[in-house]
Structures are given as structure tokens and as C-alpha cells.
Image (cartoon, rainbow, N blue to C red; front, top):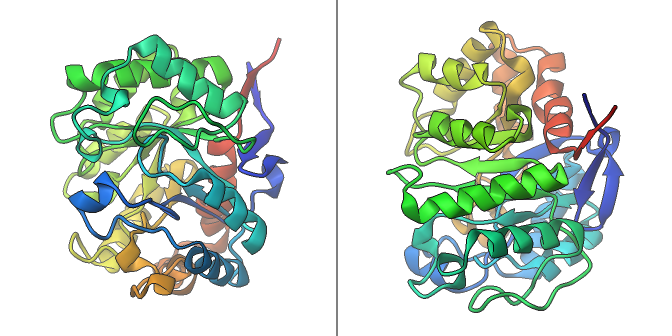
Length: 324
């Protein structure tokens, strides 16, 4: 038996009932560095602009956001805390790791062992986030803590290069009770990731699988993932190079009709070119203003909307604690 009660934000613990409307996967800050070299849209480093974006979100009824940028990969932990305070939006920060393309060859995350990685992840969840990990093994930390563990694999799945990272993340989740937020490349290798987590003692209900909706061609695959018990994050909303919002919304309707409404989360997976305050065309208000009305037009009820954006995120993000 286990309980879920509190969610850890950058400003401290909140009862899960206080989470409110939540986007389950965004990027609010990414410092200049390797990510920007891979894709110039992956630089989001202006405190004022991000606060402005968060205030727009807040004014539309948004209350909480998961920031999916992990330690050592341009996460600006101090800015996350400051922007949360200024905009009065709950931010759940990530520890963990991203795809290897976002790290230089000599980056510490590629060159330390599983035990040390797990120690770093656990420190960020229990003591405070590091602020000096982009270019060296982190040492300096602030009091603000992470509240979720990011993992990621690329198109080849969990190769030897990724194995120790996944094992360290699984250990951190098992030891602390915090949820894993796992990146899949175009939705692939989700079942492989889930199999590893379960083998390592992580309850599927403590796992969020991201980006499954990059590919909507195989409903059976989505159902198979959902049947494992994980949460499924649909975050390709407004990503028109993949498909239209109408296709996305119709797919969600089918997943609801298949009985998986308690496992669906929503997000935008924002980049610089998608944030209004940085000159982009989507903005954090897009789900509220554009996508939810589309779901309602297709017959999704307000009760279902509240599951996707309030109830399900609060269950997924709340720290898991064992009971007797």
C-alpha cells in the first residue's frame, strides 16, 4: 500500500489538492550552451520574458507547470525559483538527465558511475538543486528542490550509454518516492523503458511517458503503453510539423473511449520559438485558449478536461510514500 499526499515545487511542498491546472511538460529556461548549438530554439534564458509568459498563463487560470530541463543541461534553477515567486505559479523542477546529444563528449554525466549519479539525483530531490553542473561535477546547491526525475533515450532506445543513467534514475525514484518523467524519441521504446523501471522496482504508476503523441499511427501501441499503468503525456499540441490539433484531439477522444482517461496528461513541450514572450506564436495559454475548446467540441466533457489537467497530474506528481 502507498499514499500520495504532497508535491514538491521549487518553493516547497504543496498538498496535491493545491496543484490546480497543470501543464505536465514545459521548458521555461535553458541556458546558452550545448542545447542551443543543437537547436537555436533551445535557448530560453531571459528571466523577465519567462515571468511575463508565466503571468499570461496564470491570468488564464494556469496554476502549475512541470519544467523538464534536468541538472547539467542548462537548467537555470535559481531562475526557476525566482520566476515561480514573481509569477505566483507552482513550478515542479527536474533532476535526472536528457538525451546524450545535449552533452559534450567529456561531460561529467557521461563519465561518472551509477552510484554517483543516483546520489546527485537524490540530493536534488531531498536537499536542493545544484547550480554549477553544466560543465563540471556539481557541488554548489540552493535550497530549492527538484520534484521529478527526468530520463531520456534516443531513437536507438536504452543503449549501453544510457543504461547506467536509467538505473540511477530508477534508484532515485525508488529511494525517494518521486515520479519519473521519461522522454521517448518519437514515442518509440516506451515499453522498453517501462520494463526496465519495473524490473528495478519502480511502480508504473510512478512513471510518466512523454512524447508518445509524436506518432499517432498506432493506436494499439498507445493502448499497450497505457495498460502497463504508467501516465501518458500528450505534448505534441500545436506542433504542426507532426500533425494537426484536430488529429491530436481525435486521438485523445479514442484513448478516452478505450478507458484511459485517468492516465492522460497534457503539455506543450515549449521552445523559444513557441513562447509568445520570446516572439513565438503559441504561448503557454494555448491549451486553455485553443486546444481545450477543440476537445469540448469533440465531446470531451469538462470533467474529463479536469482529469487531464488537474486530477491526473496531481496523482502523477505527488510523492509516493509506503504505508503499513
